[in-house]
Amino acid sequence: MRAILVVNPQATSTTAGGRDVLAHALASQVKLDVVETDYRGHAMAVARSAARDGIDLVVAHGGDGTVNEVVNGLLADSDGDPARVGDVPMLGVVPGGSANVFARALGIAHDPVEATHQLLNAIENDRSRKVGLGIADGHWFTFNAGLGWDADVVGRVAKRRGKQTTAGLYLRAAVASHLRPPLGRPPLTVRIPGEEPTEVLTAFVSNTDPWSYLGDRPVHLNPESSFDTGLGLFALSGLGLPTVFKHVRQALLTKSDQRGRRLLRHDDLPMIRIDAAEPVNFQVDGDLVGQRKRVEFFSVPEALTVIV
Image 1 (tube, one colour):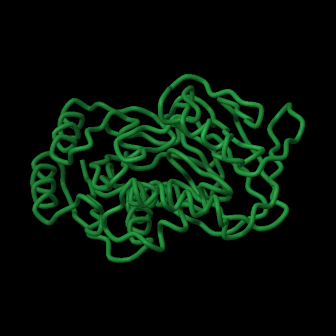
Image 2 (cartoon, rainbow, N blue to C red):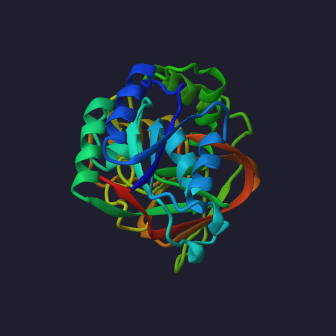
């Protein structure tokens, strides 16, 4: 088996020593090349080349941003068309970030050493699974995407964080973005198959559960979402403090289905279209992509094979 290990040295919990241990362990089972990323988009370029060169496995060692880049590189030649997803290298993940949402949802250990043992065992026993992904405006996402408030938070955090990202930083960014939204709060129109259009102020799209983590605490918006189902939608038509507190509390304290008169929630959707009256922030897998007035989200079943 030919493999490439893609390491983001700037990720929260990656170290030179950990990289060397991981590389040495992998090299005992596969023919391995190691690449350290040194610019945004580097992991995507490496994964794209790996797919074109017929590499068998690409292992991402970093946070969710590194994993997202690798996934987008592996699937780059589909040009964002779900119908063109073909045979691509398998994906392996050794967490090295702060949240590691995708890895945790797959049952991969948060500790890089434990995750390395899991990966080696999976390779030795030829153990893998297919996962469904989401795609939005040509960007593949593994666990979530969104327009509005959550994307505002992501953008604010990106301007302030260093290597370490804390739950407190996200909380402060969430409060600041709620009180002073950088692009205002233009209405969003949500369109889903078989339903009348609905106007909301912010929209969260899930590809699995939890939607994300606040420190070690999972955030549950669509508990029925998984890599084997369609997309989950969680949207709010009001962002008054009582509404926000109610749903934040439910998201942090329970995995049960959320309810509320300001809530628009669906599970297992094949597609979602969202139109904005004015450009709003748009994020995928916790990275700000830019501003958009329209985004279509699609669920792509069994898009990728992951070694687990």
